[in-house]
Image 1 (cartoon, one colour):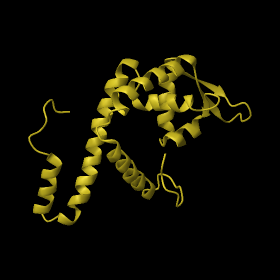
Image 2: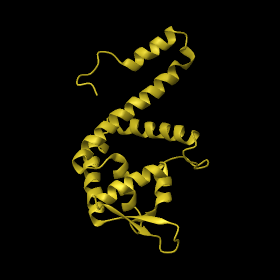
Image 3: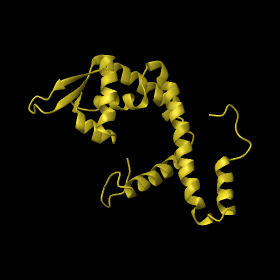
Image 4: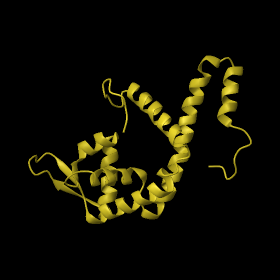
Length: 176
């Protein structure tokens, strides 16, 4: 991230250049995609700054938090992968790191010998809660947009994700 704001919006300038070079019909799409990617970089930097003292990456934090939301504190690796929408290899990597830090453990499934469960430890539960409190205070409470704009943004992004096949709620409107 630049230490000082730029004197112009580089995405707006790119949009202008797209039009100038004869790509005007796709300039809005380029600006939308580029804006989303830049916004993701900004948000990840904020989240990583908060998580750094905990030793967690965002992906490890997400896994720990997912486990805290389960009734038993455990999930099959494949189910964690599906819920987090990441490749199973990514979950395995996160579990390896979290297990080395004694924040989770692998345990056999009680009724399916082919399945391994990821189970959160008390230390993992405590760390996930502390990290969530910090993220709630420092990032989620002040995401950078007013409440009405946040609602609009979330609805627009949900539509984009649904259209891309990220999830299917049928015809039901998305609302928390």
